[in-house]
Image (cartoon, rainbow, N blue to C red; front, top):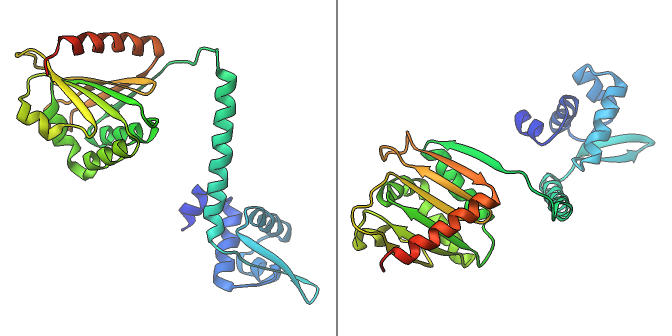
Length: 248
């Protein structure tokens, strides 16, 4: 539990005091100091920090300060409040960035596990009623990687819920095989026969991703995510051209 409390932002002394209160129950500061061998002022500082986080309660009994562990639900409430504050901060920062050039971002993901986590993040970030565009010559390799851990089913559920429409352009795949990897709420077309590539690219939200699936088991696959509006617009033009060329 100490590691989890540390990740929540508690200091080492706050963690010691909190665990001591869990063990001793409601108590004055004296027994806490005795148990931990902690300086009185250090203990009071830690108690004050825990009280500010709503993790302990302070009352007065017989003219003495008494401390006890608060309802642990407060820990979740604190996180929810932080999310509200963070969301408001992001909106404010974005409003100030309007009209400014937002710097480009490039990220590299290696291995099937990292790729599946990227797919989850994409689905969570995609706005409602948005559009996802895909060109792939490796649809069956994609299926093999995505069916693990239930990621494909999760992705389809989220996209249906958000009404995210998907356009897929397939290469080197039959119509029957396309049905196996067809996205929910999607339409698809086929490139001329003979197009074969172990790669694909996706255009989504404010980014594009370039994917290489390697041997098919996912161990040697990698993905490059590029957030750059000029780059994204050029791929949108490329996709539109391929869409017109592709057959239904």
